[in-house]
Length: 251
Image (tube, rainbow, N blue to C red; front, side, top):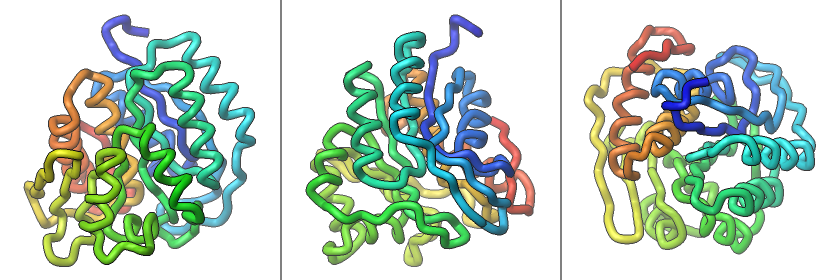
């Protein structure tokens, strides 16, 4: 274990095909010269084409894992992926904050798989806002942010409201007006992140890769803007690595 590499932790699902979840996250961490730790929130049976089922990890087991890792390692940033409920997420975030208040937390708001299997329904906006106040960044796409707050009139309106509590990277993969253009909303500004290329191949797990690349960059000490900009370049390389649904990781 290199003393020169910062530690980053992914708390997410296990995808046996390696395109998403903790396997994809740790691959991404390694390419960024960040030492990756992982806690599994759920075992899945899936391929890049089909999602069959999930077996969730008991919350107490996840919390004990967080306690153990934080006692042993100086974890600079955490990426959270799929969770079965807001209460499950709230407990994870609370445990991280209790163990290390300065650790950055990025939540990749995966509400359903690319094959339309639903993971999480947002039932309580007050609980969601309470959680967001403890998180540094969420990374929804245009479809996900509308499900995070079904009462908003537009994705931008919701992002601006959420940004009062935590920063929001609104991913542009489903942006019909500006395909591939992301927007980073913070309390004080809105930053446009344009794609370097609009001709990219679709990939299973691209959202996981983007959020874990941001997490790695933040673990390396980059600020939020730089972390998101550099992660976007990384994920574009991933998308263009081949024409299949499973990409290759390289910097």
